[in-house]
Length: 61
Image (cartoon, rainbow, N blue to C red; front, side):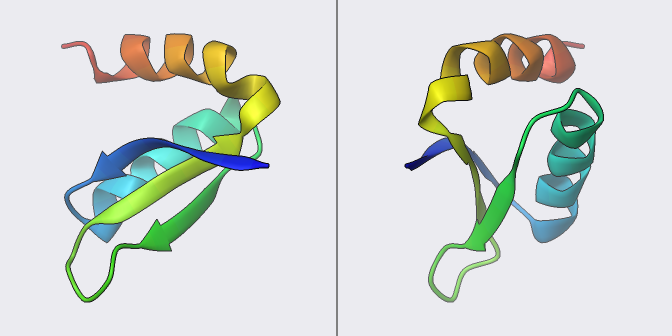
């Protein structure tokens, strides 16, 4: 089952996050939220905790 891990404000940012997570070896899907510019980042539920750790490190300045 796929779980939303993050909602990116733009498709460009979603793709950047997807590239980062994919480089770390995770499966990632992007899904646009309705007609907005926002995109959901989805990962397999079994990888949720590991992906959260990587995502938190990636988003920190």
